[in-house]
Amino acid sequence: MMAVPGRTGSLDAGELSVRADFPILGRTVRGKPLVYLDSAATAQKPRVVIEAEKTFYERSNAAVHRGAHALAEEATEVYESARAHLAAFVGGRPDELLWTKNATEGLNVLAYALLNATLDGGRFALRPGDEIVVTEAEHHSNLVPWQQLARRTGARFRWLRLHDDGRIDTSSLDVITERTRVVAFTHVSNVTGAISPVSEIVAAARAVGALTVLDACQSAPHLPLDVRALGVDAVAISGHKLLGPTGVGAVWVRADVLADLPPVITGGSTVQVVTMEETSFMPPPARFEGGTQMIAQIAGLDAAIGYLEGLGMERVAAHEAGLTERLVQGVGAVDGVRILGPASAGGRVGLVAFDVDGVHPHDVSQVLDDDGIAIRVGHHCAQPVHRRLGVHASARASVAVYNTLDDVDFFVERLARVRGFFGVTNG
Ligand SMILES: Cc1ncc(COP(=O)(O)O)c(C=O)c1O
Image (cartoon, rainbow, N blue to C red; front, side, top):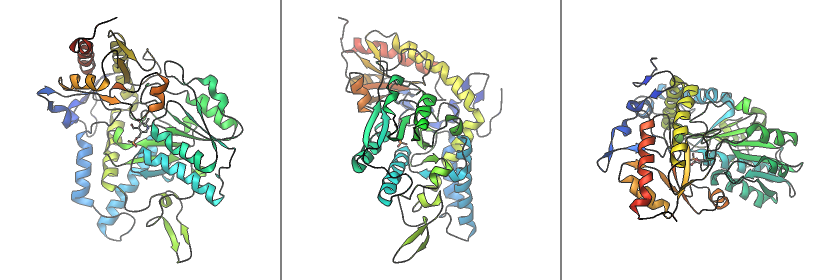
């Protein structure tokens, strides 16, 4: 057993037992112990994260990069050391990492930077006839900003298709052509749980000199991430899914790309010289971080990363692989339940969206809620993939590092009773 800084749980070979580090997991819901299976929406927070935010406010609260007093220096140190920490966690450099309030904002910053480049006539300007490619598996946050960018610039919006099991169909890579300027795609779908064929997509994009943007919201909390090995140009990260606080996210952008992207949110903290006639901007990352930032949340995210590093992402992934296997097999074996995504656990993370024949997803969730089980229902901000798989909405169970096989087994057992509860029978 290993001691891990900031942890009270034990770490045995292959199996993690960290529940005690997450205060919320000790509560009950409707008189039952909470079984939290909604981490793909937002993850629960270990005590070290909650404490880090509190400590920041109790000891170091001040605006960053703006003062010569001790607190301002401490707050700046918190802010910049967290940047270096997260950059290293994903294999990048500190000057390549921009703080944003969530992944959605990060993806919008990238899309709007390209729009501004188009308006300014910069290196990344788009022209009518250029093409932007996404996949049909995207979360709206990595679809709508690019669709809007295409609409505003006259670029053509195209997408990679999906197989019937929700995996990306690589035979549709021929939508990436000499005209493609951007390929934005998810690392892991928040509906199908499938891991995208990153190297194949990146190879196709690179062959035509297109920028690659990876949405790592559903991969970063579960798998080791190395932006250089992935070979992409930009990666969006969600802090609140990474055991960190809400209100913080980040985008990593390769230095030579970032150097030529114009700012998006301008104003205080982004500028060098301002006259009534014009403004010159700071080098990145400062020119992308207008206004007072979410410093306490960044301190919390710093602690979350330290916590995950203490566990080791390889071991997090190994622990979750066991949960994923059990979840996919368990849900797949329930009568009248159809998995929206690959039916086997390989090439997947631990989130399973499913359709219960004859029962509305909201009713599924309500019945499970009576047993203290929290799952997600709706379209999970991904309408096109639902449409592609032939449903309007689904239920989704998702695991994280703090879940156990008992959580999964209890959920599957209760799921198996849902159709009976509503009197739905086969045939
Ligand atoms: C794949 C994916 N992309 C983007 C997002 C948006 O993340 P955020 O809440 O940090 O904006 C989510 C959140 O559900 C997601 O699952």
